[in-house]
Image (cartoon, rainbow, N blue to C red; front, side):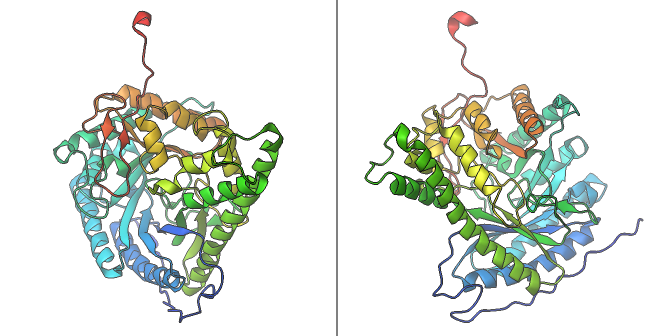
Length: 480
């Protein structure tokens, strides 16, 4: 048996701030951001390394929760992410599956121990679909808290690996088929009612350290990971990063920019040519202010936790705009407040580029995508557009060229084929390789929506009812 280095045990000093103390005084400006998750990264070479890492993470999460509560901020999720599980799980598939199920149970126990309504989930890292296809299907479908991602490949000249794309498509379809008895939905835990395929993503060009799931993963033990900003700066595990729920900040910034530059304009009224440049400049300034303040607050917290928990590195914050399901916080509301027209029409791409330009230039430690997420079933406005047939997959991918994280939480018809999904993965991988940017695809066939635009209903509160989107355009009868 090969020897390996066991990560240093984490000992965090939990500092409970008294009233009026903490990172900021209660009298100071309130927090501007909602913390969706703190993700703790574990690099391992054995299952024992992982279990020790979970124990260390528990100490860290207690410290993080205490610091956040000192600011009257609730943490939605405590997340763990490892390097690809084929690097640390048993070589025998049955033994490996038993380990993964034991990890799932351990996460449930940690959730109870942390209390306070904080959910606990974990990513099994970025894995090789050709090596663990069958095991990964079993791991995703027989647990409630485990996620994973598979990396798409492109050749040196940017051509997508169609064999890998087809493997990824088979993986998603196998998960969907294996869970038909429950309607394709998780039946217990914090994600009860969510599709099982929600727990798997196909990623392209995404480095280690994103706190957003399912793409989150840690680097192999002893290897560095790189931040988005400061460009090329490195970190190692154990480490942590923040993910936010912040589409409300986008609504605030864009609404205020229009009001300041065009006082008295009616909501969503079209911009005049004379005011267009003024409003866009104001939108950029307001975005820099809103997200600069919010990410700056998380930066201060991260550096504080780095001091309180010796040996644990603050990797950074993924500044991406992530939607909440509340209708008033929809990206559609934000974009249409500027006055360039309906979301999805002319002008949408320009605003997407504006947002991402600001997010990637914030002067803090940044990791992950640092872009604009366009999740069909997690944003009320997007879900409603999709239900009306006004949000084609091609439009989502087009906007990803300048801003987004790819095709996220998108429903396709129940009869979608492996060939159709593989072609979509090839599109995403080609764009990622050509533009040198991280993208992902999280798509699943609806359990009971055989046709495009059939309604799809969810019982999980994190999702918004929508419709299945076609993968291929309709063909007129006379053109067949």
